[in-house]
Length: 448
Image (cartoon, rainbow, N blue to C red; front, side, top):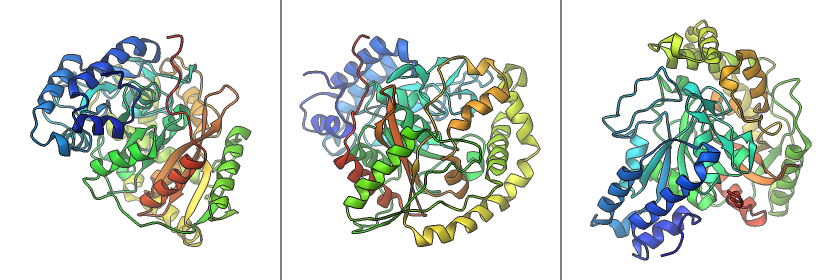
């Protein structure tokens, strides 16, 4: 039946529905590729070999197989979401090793649509940082094994970028989908608040965290988001001409932006301008307090997730992060800072339909045991991601789109941001960029 590991989710599902290939054959090929390659990448915390094959066989017997949008598609799930029968460790030795009784709602929707969960992917402890390493191993970027895949959905991104699975489930509380997607050459979208059920950790990081998908094509991303949103993904129709603001400066003073990322933005701006959009340079009115606001919310979310866990079993960087955040929990819960940020940004997004920025300020840090190092060193390492947190604070949709390459040959990327309900608008722009500047879908695994 051939090797299905390199196919898109849409291609795979169509072939399974047409009975050109069985779910077992697809899943078996996926598991074989994971066994062959993941020892170097570290994408998975656990692989569900026998269970996935058994579920593929059950899927093949479903009477509605020919109607399932994700029929037979192998998916990976981030290890902070419950998968029935598997423990949810959240990257930590402090969490209980207890099998989940039920699937998280997003996992249940994927399975109902015909997907087969092949494993749970690595995350940094409690999904705190923009790099993925910890007691369950280090996740490396398949395009450059010397660098981290990013985080916190680093394992899910690496699994897709290496072609281990065609799509994966992740989530984003301060950039945790967009950061690893940018590092690994993938397309992703953090939806606006309420589009897809969250139920992440202890309170969704005060409503800032959203579930989403990582994919190699916009079509696959749309397919996944439609399933995750239970068919309720906002549709706006085709826009003839959008007002696109182009911003190159970091939201955080003192954080420089590498020319590879500013060049990617300029190239994307040119593509969109030639496509008929009204593109002009305009910097958002980021408040001087944005860095402090982001730090307070970031640490307070970790403090909530660390409640009830044995501090002695947490890494030092996590303990310090949570301890700092405990003093901010009450003020963060009030939501005043986020409301002020939304009020400040709303006029900008009245004047402009979409904001185009670099996805990152520079390439990701070297892969290694950052979890064994101090909190300040980790904080400084995470300054490569200044463009993502503002849009978790506002709760507005934002996405990463691959464009161009870094000097190392690894992918570069841009970020698109829209007002509430603009998911379809952003996906439409991403489709334009994909059509005019197509990207290599997965990293070459030659030599593995």
